[in-house]
Image 1 (spheres, rainbow, N blue to C red):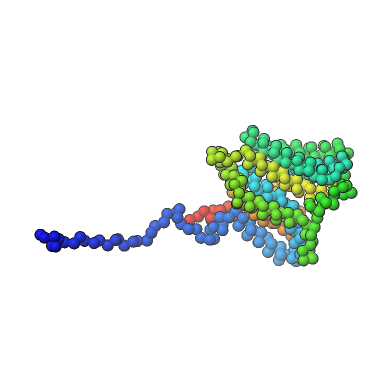
Image 2: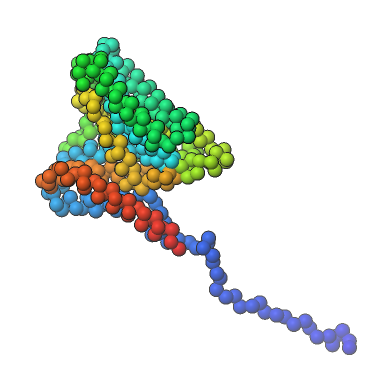
Amino acid sequence: MTMSQQAAPAVSSPPASGPKERDGRTVQRSLVLRLLARPEVGVFLGAVAVFVFFFVAAPTFRTGSAMATVLYQSSTIGIMALPVALLMIGGEFDLSSGVAVISSALTASMVSFQLTMNVWVGVIVALVVSLAIGAFNGWMVMRTGLPSFLITLGTFLGLQGINLAVTKLVTGNVATDDISDMDGFQQAKSVFASSFTVGGVQFKITVLWWLVFAALATWVLLRTKYGNWIFAVGGNQDSARAVGVPVKFTKITLFMLVGFGSWFVGMHQLFSFNTVQSGEGVGQELIYIAAAVIGGCLLTGGYGSAIGPVFGAFMFGMVSQGIVYAGWNPDWFKAFLGVMLLGATLINLWVRQSATRR
């Protein structure tokens, strides 16, 4: 057979391509599922429902002055709920935050009045004391390995007794003296307890500070290395330490952030009312924690956002004032909050489960 007679090699056509199979790792989730994965979505829907409910049930609720009152009530809770939420994302929580607010206000008032100093001296001393309380809580948690529940419960009881005993010892009363005529009072009041007008409606400056702190906390969580550390130590402390995350530094500074929030709210109370009752603050820590939980933060840590507690605090403000505007018995307020907390927790659970379904 000559070369010209050799048969040409057969050309085989490629097999028809069938439909590609994608495993679960490459499936693109829908926009709805991606939104449901956000921890603040559930509380946002709940806040909308509560707003609509009271908008219909209470005509007074629709006025600008009523909304200003709701926002003020929400801001005093929300400013504290933000650092409490960050701490919870980091895997811990603080039961002493409520009485720490009063400790801060008492310190500033007594240092200023009893030592006859400019009120800004008392404000700075109170800040140092508040940060020291937070640092102590964080150091004890990391040093002993005990649950933060136990450590901060001890701090809560200690501060509660100190607030009352020291105030009685120094002032001879259960409340501090009026500091409204002291040097620096008006300047401090303009920072912590002044008002501003928008469209003829007067708002407290705490509303503005609340939004500023929420934006700052969101930026820290989502855009900084420290935010990654918070999620890491809350998710798995040992794994975080193994990859180089400074666990001790992160947790102590988170407790100190709660101390900073306590100081700020304490200064607002002092310069709003000029005097402080030493027995106040008990029970407020549960409100702050509830606002964070309603906002999507898990008690187990590693999950949450800064925006969620904003809506959580807003729901508290709407409920506390909406009941009054609707003309209902305010004795039902705590019962309503309990139902709202349980309902929000169940909604958040359903949202997370829905977001994880394929």
